[in-house]
Length: 380
Image (cartoon, rainbow, N blue to C red; front, top):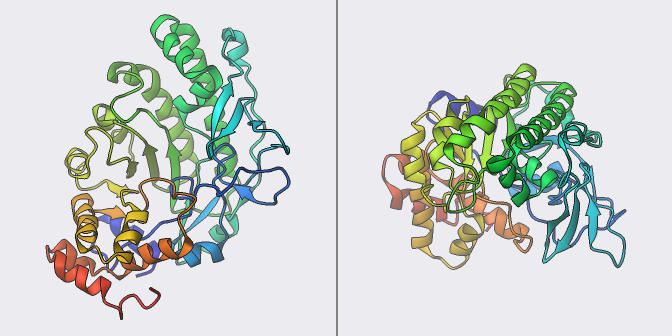
């Protein structure tokens, strides 16, 4: 099977020959930057704030990824020598600290409803990787990346975390105006991106971090009233431009609202299995057999277990695959900056070598023996 045939089989509930492996491709699976971005360094990024590098096809091939990215290519932040802050396309000021950005100033922190409704956003940059979509017979899966932060994250950035939560409790007109404007900006980005595609992608990413590790940002009731209708509007815009399934991502403990999310027609789900109530078996029981999971595997831990011949660690990975099946094998978070190409390649080679039918039939040790055999992993 080609990777695209594997994706089609996953979505249709048919057997696969091997795992579909996605690593380094989108903002969900990319590697964090190795150093603070600087103006004029020549790199482009899939995320203009986190600065997750856009990798070339050759770089993705070296990692062993079976997927390719199509999405906006943002230039590096305008951080000058001796400075640590930069301004994003919404006017949010960020400071680069301890290897990642943190918001320093929110442009709508004290804005009234009129100013909120007029909030501007810089245009979306040109797409990278769109050429792959011109080939309808391609083998690799093409993932169309998220063009902007999700609904609640955009509102947090514009208004401020505590300010927005206070709005939802005490100033509902302001909260509604903020969330309406955030939804408008996100929908326009998806219109621009999807309208520029020369062909159909295989997956479209939408990310919305709706919770922290132990609970929701907003209650289930407020999610249903304030967020779900606006998310449905954004998804409607996406579906008006493409038939590709939606790959939905959210960090944190989203178990109380998971049924709301799935009822919006999400086919591929990316979540944090270490958050409260989000272990793989529990989410699988809640989601049912038709939702494909994505991004549940600890790639650095797989590489470490291979390096140290830690068979118990590898068995835990196989147990996660069985508990989460059907799934796309992808890292559960952005790869750490210090993770070496060789380590990632070791993990993808192991996953690619798995005898999936044997594993899913319950022969875990047989599948493990075959995948770790030297002949099965010639690159290691």
